[in-house]
Amino acid sequence: MIIKQLSVFLENKSGRLNEVSQLLGDAGINLSALSVADTSEFGILRLIASDPDKAYQVLKAADFSVKLTDVVCLNSPNVPGALAKALNILSSEEVFIEYLYAFSMDKQSANIVLKPDDIEKCIQVLQKHQLELVKASDLYKI
Amino acid sequence: MIWNEKIECASRDEMKALQSERLIDTVQRIYHSIPSYRKKMQEVGLVPGDIKSIDDLSKLPFTTKQDLRDNYPFGMFTVPMSEIVRVHASSGTTGKPTVVGYTRKDLNTWAEVVTRTLCMAGVHRNDMVQIAYGYGLFTGGLGMHYGCENLGASVIPISGGNTQKQLQLMQDFGTSVIACTPSYSLFLAEAMEEAGIKKEDLNLRVGIFGAEPWTEEMRREIESKLGLKAIDIYGLSEVIGPGVSCECEHQCGMHINEDHFVPEIIHPETLEPMPAGEVGELVFTTVTKEGIPIIRYRTRDLTRLIYDQCACGRTLVRMEKCKGRSDDMLIIRGVNVFPSQIESVLLDMSETEPHYLLIVEREGNLDSLKLMVEVQEQFFSDEVKKLEVLRKKITHNIQSTLGISVQVKLVEPKTIERTAGKAKRVIDNRKI
Image 1 (tube, chains in turn orange, green):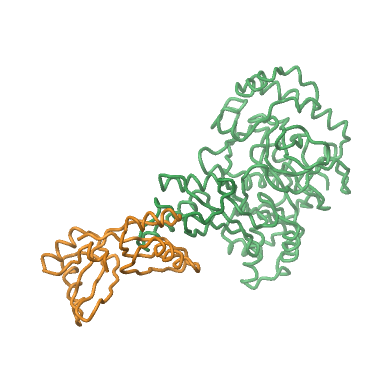
Image 2 (tube, helix red, strand yellow; image 1 turned 180 degrees about the vertical axis):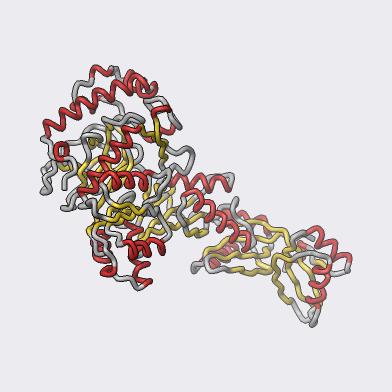
């Protein structure tokens, strides 16, 4: 259930994101999802790769500050109110979200990648409420 | 006015005779009371009797800041503590500060030399002197203070900072002489501008500026903005504090009070004495101090000595404005900063060796310090707020260590250029 997300430290200067995607592309690594958190001075690139360990090695070899972070991915129906419902549950059970990003695959469902403060508890809560978690192996394949 | 004409205008022969007599006595005292220095002399096969005149000075071993640290706190004092009436300490912000002690006679000597420098600067007993150097362990404030009192000028012991109050007293008390760091004087000038105070509203006549390097351009700017004559003063606590040397009204090099502090110029690498007039590292031997006399102290300041007689009539040797340092110490807003201090702060926050680059700029007239820190894995968190916390923590720890503000920027690994595998630590963009 736990998904290994890659986090990469990027300075705010042109060409850096490009360089990361080029390196991963050349290594035959596919990306399922990515998001960038930015501040005025730096950004953190977060991505889900087809082979997280290999992607980690590739970026590390190129001197990037990179880290594998545990996240979970929730599969939610692609209908109004579905995200709110899931977040309500987490909030009422006191699971706090550090950040999230989401993407829709089709008309039926959407994937929400979550970084909770307590990942074990988050998984328990989601499972208790019969919310669907995406398996790591499935997510890497997208 | 020349305060001590007999000394300040003595012939070279008279000066050398005085220095010789005093050096012989100093070497005797140190040899018999400081085991670490006696050992140094024994290592090169010297006994006090080998020192017969000031010409033998270059035979003696050097003293460094490290020697003072190794003998912390009072190991270099040559008199019992009952004779010590005051201690000062330099801004040793990492590890141990360097501590110096003064006997009553030392304090009198100090007041005498500061009084001479005030006269060189053109200060007299009718002046109102605002001392905006810090009072306390730093020698700047109290050193100037007793010199001014000895001269008979009126002292405003306001100490550093509190700019609004400085301006208020300058107006209300009719301050005619200001003593502070050159960069602070320009800060005052900016504050005056903001408050709508014109130099004509003030009574300033002379500024005595020291404790940090400054340029001729800065001098012109200070003089035009504050409407005073800007005089450069030099000193270091290991020698005595302010008053080691100072410019006269001709502003053509700082007259060294060489009957107390004998200067030499050595090659910073070979350590051999340099021919007269060449630039090298300035070395001082104190020949009258009792508390902590010091032989051949390496100041790490680079300058040259001028032996020609000055237009003011003084024969005291002059030193030019310091041209730089022979070590990696930076003087930023009057504060001594060693890159190793930054390194130890960063090391305290992580397990491995940090990569960083210090960039010193002079923006407007104030020095600014920027620090780039590479975000190695030990620092990296994938949450923005944690990185912001890290940045603030680095900023705070460095500020509290150095006592000056710093702007921290987090950068990617390997951003900082490495030459021959070794990272460059400092870029000083100030044109000093």
